[in-house]
Image 1 (cartoon, rainbow, N blue to C red):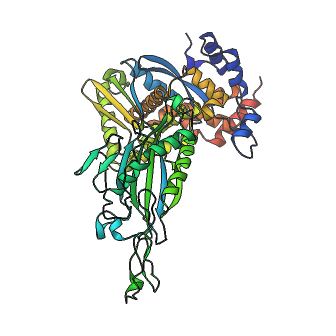
Image 2 (cartoon, helix red, strand yellow):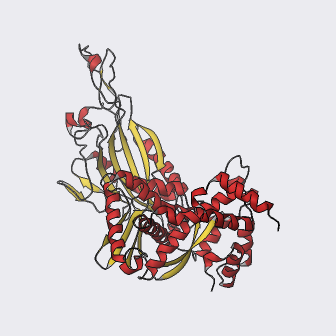
Length: 539
């Protein structure tokens, strides 16, 4: 029986129709392009045409007991073949196991210290002036301008509508503004409303007073979100030092304090013009919002902007700076694991045990070397980006979240170890994607791709994408520690070279055969010359 990869494009489409993976209309869509000008011109500005990317299917994926043909959109040769090759080895050892968590997306509502002399208490009463005592830690606070401190946190679920009753006004610049993290440290108590209570913490009191109204505004901003299983889940307040703090000269009638206010002392100190002062500090409200099955960028931003307007009305001594989702998405994580019997990794020249041990060593080196980690991670993203793009999800969002998850202590998302019998691999990374909405529900080819995947839930799609990333990583490392990366790439690279030289139809395979037989002469000029000779020969 002819293998799927040995078929022509038309033959593959015919087979997929026979297997009831595609309809005749689906095949026509793939043959003739899936995007018309009316759709495209409404998606981007100044539309002039389309930029097609090849769409292929990765085979042999067994994920959580289900077999998948996985659509992958990529211009890079061998990415789909490599993922399929690794998936086949993993399937023979039981397949992938996945676990996905979707707790929500964070929206940041950011204020900066105002420049007025006024101050506001927790329920909006003006009066007083800012002073250094308003920042936790007294005179030492702010010595690390980039530090971030949690001030209060509230779980929205279970908050009582009347939670603000009886809350006494508390000045936000008072010495009681000490840092607070829910459930940790001395002096904390968890209230019935789910708010982190820390004794003498005005931000805690502020959040306790306003959490019910914040929740109500969030619901009003997107009324249908709750019916899709989403909604506002929690709110936290954090203070962050302004890393742009600069030395500023105070006017003759006062000195500039950390809050950006002038402490009018009526005296002209001799050293007034050399005082180091912070231009201000940022107060940040982080809203954790569950977007349901969607990726949720527009939903989250809509809620953030609505809540920001309300908060700005309460915090007159602060200036609203921005309200926007964060592409850092630790609450949207996908994990996949696989165990491969060592003998399935063997090559003609190397035992499976030796290959497995070398892959584990290569994995450890990627964690130790920043130079290697960059390329290691690129190989993972080859597979991930291809599925994200094919499914109509946002590749920039996924990449931003993924790389934000890494640092010098954790340089890559995958780990491989060898236990003497099996190679065990794991991937754990942010995966902020959706299964409905936006381009997923607009682009005809993306809708077709989701049908090929049997319309997975967002959680299931996260696991599928993570599995492809793990397979791509395994294939690349197996090639690297055995025959080298170029051997697997060469055939498709030669096909690209033949097409660049102008070969069409049957000419392409003839020219590729010549280039493969003459690797030392495989250049663009040589390919053009050989193509000319092919065309000059009598039929």
